[in-house]
Amino acid sequence: MTSENDSFPSRLREKQAPFVRTDPIVHARNQWRWDGPLDEVALSRYERDGFLWFSGFFSQERMAPFFDELKTMAEDRHLMESEQVIADPNTGDIRSVFGMHRLSEHFDRLTRDPRILGMVRQLLGSEVYIHQSRINDKFGFQGSGFDWHSDFETWHSEDGMPRMRAVSASLMLTDNNEFNGPLMLIPGSHHWFVPCVGETPDMNWTDSLKAQRLGVPDREALANLAERGGIQAPKGPAGSLLLFECNTLHASNENMSPWPRSNLFFVYNSIDNTLQEPFAGPRARPEFLGARELCEPLTMYDDFPELANQGVGPLH
Image 1 (cartoon, one colour):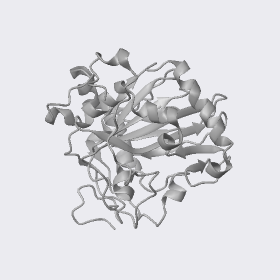
Image 2 (tube, helix red, strand yellow):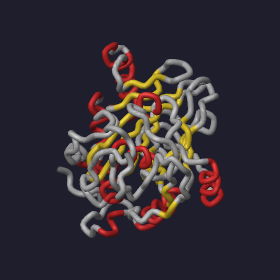
Image 3 (cartoon, helix red, strand yellow):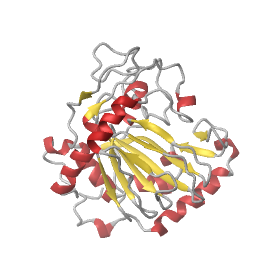
Image 4 (cartoon, helix red, strand yellow):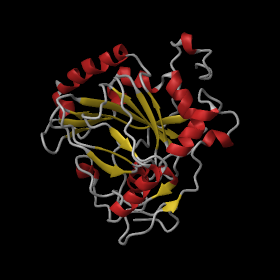
């Protein structure tokens, strides 16, 4: 149930108007020692829009090993029958696989890349850990979409994330174009918290990961925020990177093209923002959706000597 001291009340019985957030957006501004690779222009853009886009951040060759691992995972019957694998509600094909950094060595290494980790530490002003990781697949002609939502609203309500101090990194395994269901974002929407209506049922995640019905902002609030900030859908080649703030409203359409769309997601949370009891849910979701026991700070891999002097901090 919702706490009386909850700063972000949601899953309510009656509609409540959106309100302006008071949490910082770039936390490094209050933490002098968290310098990093992002300059003032990038930091100001992130504060304004709630996301940063890096086209071609990695080479397409860097993405190839992930497809090999996905093929191996698809042949693992035990994994495919586990709760970590979510099927598309329309086709039965793989929609999402959670806990990817625990399943894949390549993925684990990726979360510790100095260039990404340096930016995330700078934005969050602290050491970080992986709150959640996943791959989202949309097959050609059939991949289902994702309704508008704020990740923070779900993580706060159902996982007990206390404050807005997390960043999602989305890495494009395939080209993202205007036809295959790219991620859409409402710039500036992260400045507002939009309470949602509807009590969270027990084990809501077993349905919400297939088709989200709770934690979806009402259309009036969405329309007002879109009128303010518009809608953007960053598009680019495989290897492109999107960093977006945990409260930025986003969604994606169905894939009606013949081209698949596969994106990796890994969520960094501040070690000073670890999970409490759910604020609007009967019990905590599984560990692979919201890490509680495995919250050790990430360390950078030490096998990137060519990056040592590029402003990403010490390799350790």
